[in-house]
Image 1 (cartoon, rainbow, N blue to C red):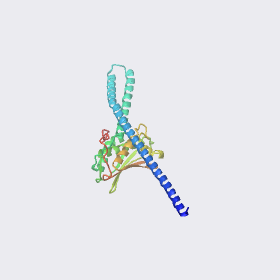
Image 2: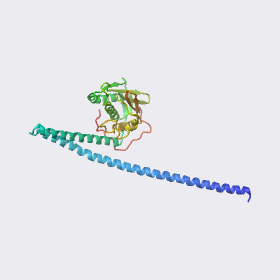
Image 3: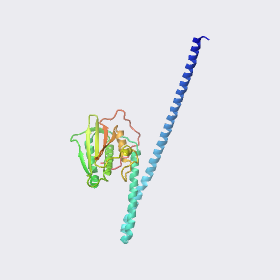
Image 4: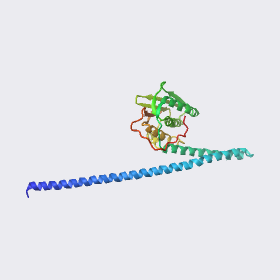
Length: 294
């Protein structure tokens, strides 16, 4: 056979084989992507079902807890009214008090979970963030005093306006303040417990710094503390910082952590002053706003 023709035939055969292999590879890739998409969709559906189930279960547990606490308080009053020796009533009162405290703690954990698991629907409007921070600090002052923490606001004297959901932003800031106070509980007597709150702004962004004088966050915990149920303090629910981060992210912002060597931690909420153009509204289920807020 003519070498030229043989070369052409060989080239055609090889080309066809390459095209077929490429086509098979492309089909295989598409099929794998389709399978992965199906798995992701199925996983998302299962997670949504699980979220709905756990949220409903939390509600079902939370509601009777209020009744348990109320009845335990009534039992406590009845014990105090008993005409019985103090050495008999004191142990009973101690047990009832423990029941009330633990039931109330469980109710708080459930409320934190429902806030974190709920969907956010922000009600943004132009807001003076200086005033918002002042309101939160006024509300938080008694708790700081009770923990022997000195609040040191360093706020501008002029307005700093941003489009935010004021109630949600207050909740995020309050969560960070509470976390900071807990972080300083282990300070030695010679180390002051101070909490500096500062606002910094540019033309496009506003940042609120919460700087504590605690021991600082260990390096291995600096990312994990923003995950649910990871708490660096005894008795913490592990949902305060994750909820704060979700609120910041829903505003198109973020929360960052800067550990100051030997001088504590600087948690910063940074948000854009205007509504991000790619922001979208979430579903109709709003996050609970029933938690303590100024």
